[in-house]
Image (cartoon, one colour):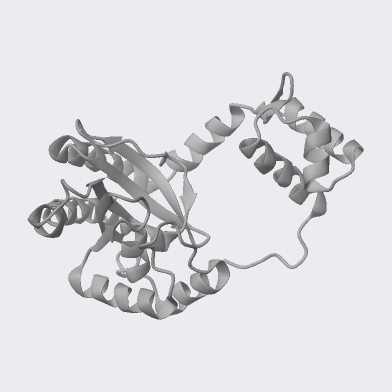
Amino acid sequence: MHEVANPVTTVETAFEIVEYIAEHDDAGVSEIAADLDRAKSTVHRHLGTLVQRGYLVENDGYSLGLRFLDLGLDARNGRPLYHEAHAKVDELADRTGEKVWCMTAENGRSIHLYGASGAQSVRTDSREGDVGYLHQHAAGKAILAHRPLEHVGNIVDRYGLPTRTDDTITDGDELFEHLERIRERGYAFNREESIPGLYAVGAPIADDRGVAIGALSISGPANRLAGETLTEEFPELLLGAVNEIEINLSHG
């Protein structure tokens, strides 16, 4: 997890354009060039190449092509964590009726790897492939608590502790104290730290060295995830599922 000293400019420009279009669907050449402070001719050449390769589609403006879906599925399906966890995620969603996620971390950020919705789960804007900040989520904090302290410090130094709600942890000392309690307990809570009114509990999935490679979480409205449901029932379900996943990963 380090910054490249001399990034390849043409590659960097291509990804800037792709990321811009992901946020501004149907953007045109002039708009992209102006907002990215690039020459129109440069942007036009990159757009043409990306369209030719199937990564963009040109209509009134430019949109992402479904080639990205193909690559994204390849990236996810190639992860042993996904193969071992997705059935357990489905099972937990059916059993609890709530939203269940398998999360992993890459380059110090959280990645929603796979999710399933139970019969009474609430809708949020989270989706598979979402990139976020680990400290804002129960699963993310469970991962951080089971990573080396130096690694966690590097993540905090690189990204800071961006806030999402009034209850998001934004102080480094508070975060490290919080992570120590998670290590002792074995699972993490999220009480409105990512979405107002939403509670969650998350448990880490560790490798043979005890280092977290991912986590499972169950989330739902605070009125349902109250008392022993949050602090005892759901943690017990998560720890059982995680134990099975870890065994399968170890002997896969």
